[in-house]
Length: 163
Image (cartoon, rainbow, N blue to C red; front, side):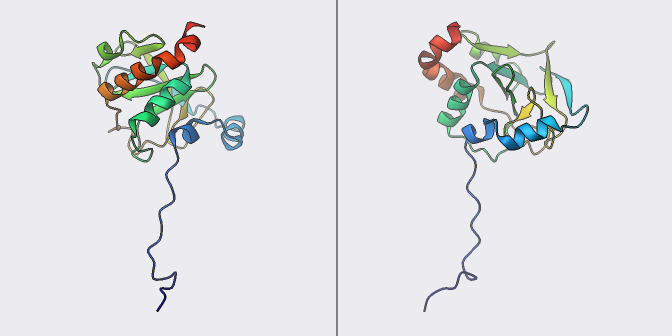
């Protein structure tokens, strides 16, 4: 006897990929155009996390993809589409791991980062990549793995970093 579709468990929709999450879509552009006033704030770095600023943005996206970390975990990652920078939040004090990687900057204590106020907010310069679940207890990216992937991919981006 064949099972009816009502007997089958509901399938969870496929998780978006990192490139899909960072893409500038028509929907995002429409949100940015009619965005709310004051939907971003400058947030101090170096307290709960440090920000790894990677340019070009695609390099960071490729590193996250290569790390095979899930997009649904709610990692604290912000895209600045205007400047082409992806900010990946890592535990504080991780900066030395990224010191020798050209095209990468660490924003730690004393730096401010423009971030959306809530997971529902977005702008061209502060766009959530994924949706953090809890801004007070953020999910941070493993700095060892991120630094290793950025180094592996660096030769592919050497020309973009030089310009």
